Length: 164
Image (cartoon, rainbow, N blue to C red; front, side, top):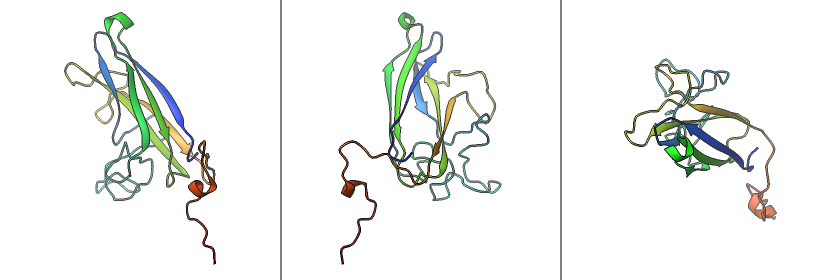
């Protein structure tokens, strides 16, 4: 729902590596019912990243070429090391904004090894098109809105009514 805050606690355990968690640009999720953010190409029909429209499963994080910056944050809370069994933790907070309603939005996260910058294995599936990642599909409802704390009618109304 637009205006509601969603939170994820992400944990990655990669033995003998400290890793950084990041949100994936132009993600592909084979297990998400066909939801993806493909790059625009002649063979791509429908929504794609690079067409100048923020549509399909695109967000500011996974397609900055088309979409405005998201109301989101990804904060590393614990870095993997031998003392914590190589467990890296991060907190992700996101709030859908107007223009996202009625869409399925894809958020995917992966990791990079901090020592070498190489992609570290986060899952078991690895194909030429997709690195292992953790993905979430958000169904942003139409015609509903979470009113933030301390909001006023004036701050919530998109186009204030004209007094004639």
